[in-house]
Image (cartoon, rainbow, N blue to C red; front, side, top):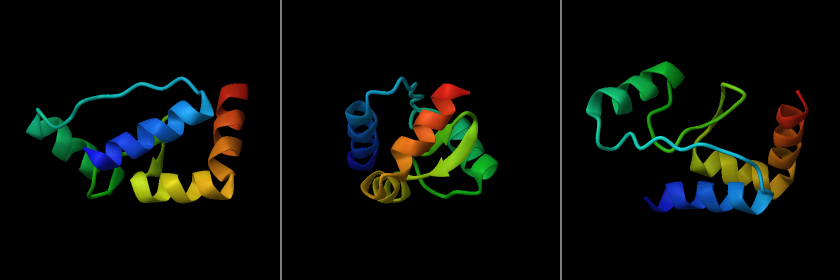
Length: 77
């Protein structure tokens, strides 16, 4: 849950709209999303339907200023 909170805090800081889906209560959805993205962990972040990464990648992109750019491009499209 700590990793998910990091992602939410970053998105809140950026002030962008986002949606969350609780996959922890449903094994089939949780496994399905891992298979869909070929990413073994949760949370998983998608921008405009494209998989970006998990918590560590999102933190790195945020710290480099790249996440803000990705979000701005997505919101403009």
